[in-house]
Amino acid sequence: MTQRMVKCVKLKKELPGLDEAPWSGELGQRIYDNVSQEAWNQWLSFLRMLINEYRLVPSTKEAQEFIAGQMEQFFFGTGSALPPGYVPLK
Image 1 (cartoon, rainbow, N blue to C red):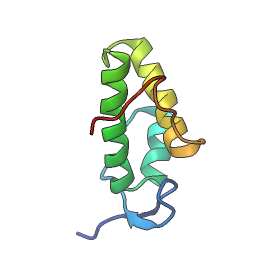
Image 2: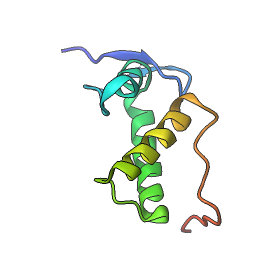
Image 3: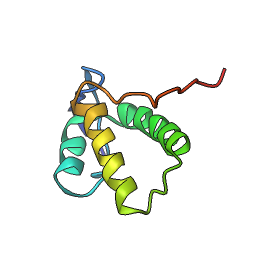
Image 4: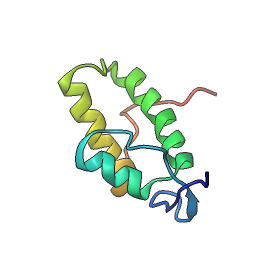
């Protein structure tokens, strides 16, 4: 089975794509069509930081809406902003 390739909008090159849409709806389909597995892995690391910094409960509607907005910015916008006062661990 050959790996599905995509022109990754985040990393600006042809890379292996995701096996399935990672999110529901139109956003999930856009990610499936335009985001590489490598960029998705970067998002997952960023998402962990967002969940921890904002103390999100991913099962809530509010958190899911926030995450969807951040995901949209991360892949298709100007990039997701770091939380105010965020200091990365050394």
